[in-house]
Image (cartoon, rainbow, N blue to C red; front, side, top):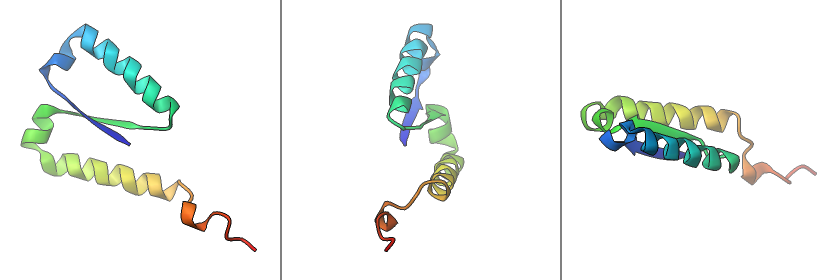
Length: 73
């Protein structure tokens, strides 16, 4: 999981296009990017943290536990 905080510069088309390209590359490696506007982080941190926590919980529900792999006998 990657977390990106987007400031005002991300409203520019060129910056947005770079973000899209970067996010596609990260997705190829299995990395999901959670994006938040800087305003959200500054004014609504509780919901930002709630969103991150929800993502982690859902991810763990659908991801095998590596410590249990190979333990079948």
